[in-house]
Image (cartoon, rainbow, N blue to C red; front, side, top):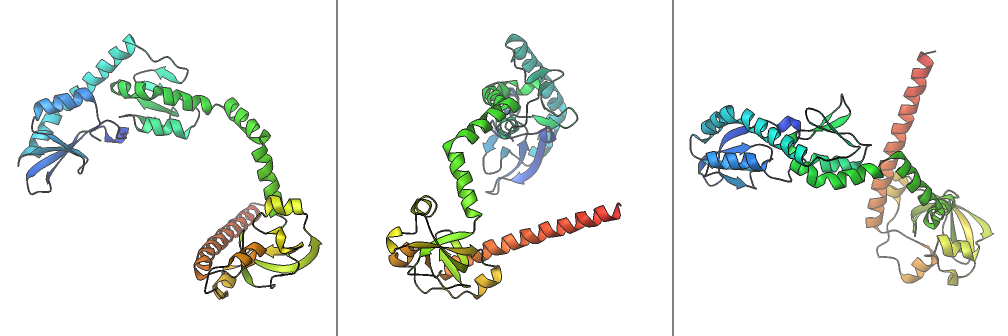
Length: 317
């Protein structure tokens, strides 16, 4: 709060002073206020023994009467300090204005941009900057002009990137990329709920097994031969050298099945990994149990919300 680079909002505009020890038994008080170079200079002139303390996140002023002296100073000076800083900022802006379609000048500086996380992150680092829900814009007092000017190139760039037309261009480029086509093809393959296994090393059905895609329960052997190109593209971990590959249907194991699954005492050997399935260790089962429990809770929440929505619609008829 007291130095440059620390985020400050409108809620922390006021000067605060708290009597406390420095940590080594020395009496004194901490002073916290948003950073402004001229304000710090005036504060240091009034309290030459003040020192910034990173561990306290504030200025520390020694003395048994430090809190009283700090509050007396803020009562006399604080309003004037802010007014002086704003006036100095207005003069600086008039001499060298920021010209941008995202910036308006009113009693303060009004920053209005499309939503962008990058823009929000930058503005949060500007002292005294605050979000105004009524105007749906960020309000920055003139006293923060210097910090805003330093961050403006990043703010303006983030705003341009967030414009709807720029978003549409990026989405079109993303969809046209080979990587996007690969992701769509992989997702379509996963929805088939199948897995290649060697015809001469079929897995046991109905048991929790580990695969290159995580734990699974195989339900049936279709007998359909796997095309080598499909296996190489989507299941590179299953070695085709193990013989002819055939499809088996698979599903995710439930949490109860994972709890009852018997773990392997040792890690899988290269032969087991090459065939594509093996018995999971207890460490793997623990991770899979947590994932399954989380997914089951999420599913229960969705079903509950669906029932509530149906009940509400029925009551409104």
